Length: 112
Length: 175
Image (cartoon, rainbow over all chains, first blue to last red; front, side, top):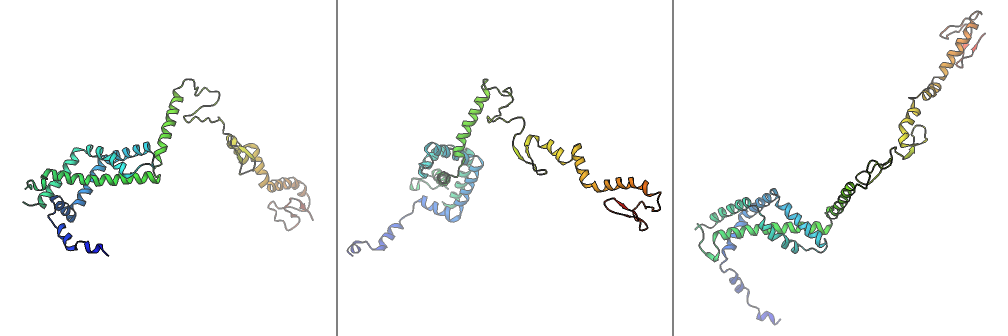
């Protein structure tokens, strides 16, 4: 029962948390709330499948799994295998298209 | 339009940040899917491919090898899987018509004889089904010269109620 005496009263922490959300956070919330994040994800997913990027990444995974043995692989391993190659091998037009859409959204979401 | 240096993040950087965030989610999904398939052993091709690669390399080697005589190897031809087939099919099974054990390669000629194309088979068939008719006609033909001169006249259609009764076994009973 002692520690309840030392525990800071709850209202204080709530105050702390409401201090100035970063721009990133604001944008993130706006993206999600408006549904734009979902749309962007679906668009990106579709483009990546069409271009064969997804299949290439899957092949990378399978090679890695074959090498390491299928029971020795964690999801973390796979993420670390794919991320550098994945980021680098995105076709430019797809990247441009998505960036354009994101920019448009940002412009509309942060009027200044 | 662009938020100037707020939180040290410029606008284009922000776009990139959002983009990479999306990409990371997709990558995690993909990794998770591959991981699941691997753990559950759903990807049957994982080990099959190696096996097939090995077999195809093997096959290619044996084809390229001039020491391996292909079509002139006695009477057996080796196909790409390394199997040989004898020129006449040798599997033995039972004929559904006569019940004999027949070799597969000889089944067609056997069926011909068994089911009625050949001379002997046809005789066999006709003899059994038309046996009665032939016999009757033959015996009645031989009887008629004898019966006509006598008083008993026999109708050719056998409907004689007057004198003789014609029995199915061909014998004519004269009254």
